[in-house]
Every structure is written in C-alpha cells, then in structure tokens.
Amino acid sequence: MLSELLLTEISRLQGQSALPLHRQLYEALRRAILEGKLEPQERLPSSRDLVQDLHMSRNTVVAALNQLGVEGYLVSRVGSGTFVSAKVPLRPQQSARTLSHPAQQLSGRGVRLSTKFCASELEIQPFTPGIADFSAFPVALWQRLQNKHWRMTYPEMLDYSSSGGYAPLRRAVADYLRVFRSVPLDVEQVIITSGTQESLALCAQLLADHGDTVWLEDPAYWGAGKAFMATGLTVHPVPVDDQGMAPQPHDSASPPRLIYATPSHQYPTGAVMSLARRHQLLTLANQHQAWVLEDDYDSEFRFSGPPIASLAGLDTQGRVLYLGSFSKVLYPGLKLGYMVVPKGLAAAFKRAHYDLNRPGQMPVQAALAEFIDMGHFAAALRKARQSYAQRRQSLLTALQPCLGAHASISGAEQGLHLCLRLPDTLDDRALAQRLGALGLTVRPLSAYCLKRHDMRGLIIGYGYAPLAEIKRFGALLAHTLQHALGALGPG
Ligand SMILES: Cc1ncc(COP(=O)(O)O)c(C=O)c1O
Image (tube, rainbow, N blue to C red):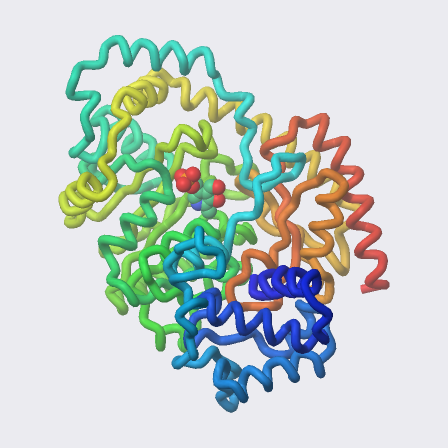
C-alpha cells in the first residue's frame, strides 16, 4: 500500500518537474509523513522491500531515506528498522488537518481512512472476488413480500427499533444458526445490524477504548481494518498460515482487547482454522480477557470437505461474538446482517446500537423474516449452492494446467473465491493489472497484506460470472497465467 501511494505521488511529481529519482522518492515520502498518511512512529518497510516494490535501485532508496533521516523525519533503530519520527516537524499548512487542496479539510484519521488499505475499485467482470450472482435473487417474490408488509405496517414499524431488530427475524436467525452453524444461543443474544461493517464498528466502539490493540489476520479483510482504524484501535497484524491465524508467543507482547478472525474460510487466503488453532485462540482470548470477533461471512457455501462448525460453538467462556451477513446469500444493498453477543452484553449492545445508529427498516426485516420462515431462503441457498458449485468446478478445471511447482490453490472448499498461490518472486500486482487489461478482474494477494511481504497470489472469484463465461474466460485466464509462470523457468 505504501509503495502504491509513493508511486502515485512520484508519477505526479514527474509530471511537474525533472527532479532526480532519489529526490522524487524523498519528496513523496516527506509529503506522506507531513500529510499524516504515514503516522508518527510508524515502521517503514525495509530498504530491501522498498527496492523491490518500487523497482528502484538500492542507491536511490538509501539516498532518499538518509536525507529524511538527516532532516529528522525518520529515525533508525538498530536491529528493528526505520520509523517515522515521533516528533515530525509538521508545517501547519501541510498538516493532516489541512491538506494542500482547500476543499479537503480531512482529519488525520480521515486522510488515513481514505488512503490506506482501501477496497479496490469495484469493477464487476468475470472473476471479480466477493461478488455473488445477484441476478439469481427472486426479485418478484421479494417485491410481493415487501408490498405485503408495507400494506400491513403499523406506525410503530416505521419508528427506530430499540429491541435489537424485528423479533421474528431474530428468531429465524437464531434457529438457522443453532442448526447450521452449531452456535448455542438464546434469541435475546441476536441483534440485527445493517451488515458486518456495522457489527464490527459496534464491537470496536463498545468493547475497546481508543488505542487498545486489536489482533488482525495478516493478510486481512480491508473492511475490518477500516472499522478498527476508524475507532482509533491499534492494529497488530498476526500472520496467517495454512491453519488460519497463527499467534506466536511474541504476539502476546501486544496484548489484544479484540481478536478479529475468519476461522471458517480465512479472508482472503481461504485457510480453514484447525481445531488445535481454535482452542489456542480461545485460550489466548481468555488469558488476555479479549473478545474474539468471528466473521463467518461465507459459510453458507461449502462445497467439499467436512462441514466446519463455528468457533462460537466451541466457546465455553462467552468470549466470542459471532457476525453474519445477508450480503452474500441475498444481496449487499439489502444492508442487513446480524451478530450474536454473549448474554451479559446483549442489553448494553441493544441500547448503544439504538443511540449510535438509530436502527430501523422494520418492514424490510419483516419481509425477510417471512422469506426465511416460508422456506424461500433455504430454497435460494440450495439453488445458489448448486450454481456456484458448477462455476467453482469450471474454474478449477480451467486452472488445472497452471498448477505445479510455481502455483497451487488454497481455500477452494468454500465461499465464492479461491486463492491461487504464486511464488514470492512474482509481481502479483503487475499480473493482476495485466489480467485487468484483458477484462478479467482478480485481486493481488499482496494487496491484502498488512505487514508481511512474503505472500503473492491472486484472489479469483467465481460467484459473479455465469458458467458459460467462466468456461470462456477461464481459458484466457489460464493462458495468461501459464505465460507468466513459464517466464519463471522450471520450478
Ligand atoms: C470477510 C468479509 N466479511 C464480511 C462481509 C460482508 O460485509 P457486509 O455485511 O458489511 O456487507 C464480506 C463481504 O464481502 C467479507 O468479505
């Protein structure tokens, strides 16, 4: 992310003057510091990583870093790296509060929220990850249900909802979670929200204070990173391996107040958290008196392997908050999700949710409750599962010739995307760009990484495009990948 920011700034500078490259890099870094895009005491990537990410010579990078060190913008600590100085010489006219463009009166936090760890631009094309096939949604039926509930609506239904949501919808969600996700719960623990994003914000606002630490998977879901950034939490990245989030003893030196995890299907690598890891995470949460936020965003779509129960189902100490969403199964614009909070927190969460967010949309919640109760949700899910299973298989078949010494697939058992793992010598961003130019939107795995630099790959979605398109464009995808992998030589 830093390298993207620097390269954008450098290309702007190149349009304005003919400064030597080390001076352009110096200026780009200096501006990032002064504008708050790099925070005081933030650690910079190593010069080796900068050389690699920016495609510049070591001399260029070292000259720029040295100059910033001399001027007091950066400090080096032997053995631990280079950091932005705690006493950045901010110039009032260029501080984070007043950016160079007068219309942009953003706070420092506003600058960070709008520039760091951003969702990629939404281009909906074959293989765009995270997008379901909304064309399959039964619009006519939904419209009938909506009309019915609007006709029956009484004045209280138009008010804000203070009770955690429409009671029959909370009951329907509770029944679903008990049966299909093994979440032991009482309906009073279910709170309807406007989606996972709101659930995450509520958890951060109510369970942690400004500056508290949240452990975030590395690589991570940008939406979670943003929710925690917005609430002033300190993000501590915990690397993920093929068994999910893998906390090491040194991580406990940054004790968490919150732990965010996607144990059923790590986003984006797709790793399934092993049972041993689940127990380790719950033990750590207990030791640190931390809350675990389990984001179970796509468990409705499991295609192979044994069913995976929720982490909440293993929790005997009431430390897990379970978060779910209707965005993938129905459609994201519905803006409805749910959380299951421990019994002792339910009343406080409902009260604060009411005060902070003024939840409502009761007629829509009523229509959804009936949609579930009448079996339409289960039917939609069955149909979607069948269709996605075929698309997934078609993509796997297309990718087969690419697999081998240089490439492997992870996380294809569940959800609407898979991860094609690539060697760390391959520039996955450039490859994703090349595919984008061909009309295929995939995301580079490295773009989801917070601190680590050892993961390359492509996140490839199969939810959006119809089967025929996956077949047709799958061949183009595989051909381009084979070409890129061929250039690496024999493995
Ligand atoms: C990891 C993850 N969590 C949650 C969600 C759903 O979020 P929301 O309910 O805010 O739409 C998504 C959607 O793409 C996701 O990828």
